[in-house]
Length: 106
Image (cartoon, rainbow, N blue to C red; front, side, top):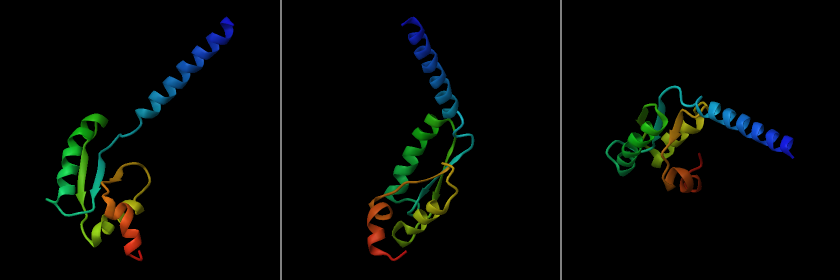
């Protein structure tokens, strides 16, 4: 029984150290948050308020990139085509996230 508990404890320590190491690998550079609407809109104001909190939480700057047009499809399309490395994120509203695919062909 003692050996089993020792093995479980060792496994827990190993898993803990692996997950801590993985968590420290991201982010190592600034993150871009694409807002699919122009500067000064409600989405932009919300993104800039979130940026401060998220930047402190992850320890890296967050850069806001406003890509307005086509009901949010331009910004959403940019993020969809971005390298899937976690450094480009979308502040989505219901338009680009859900309803636009029903209203537009592409």
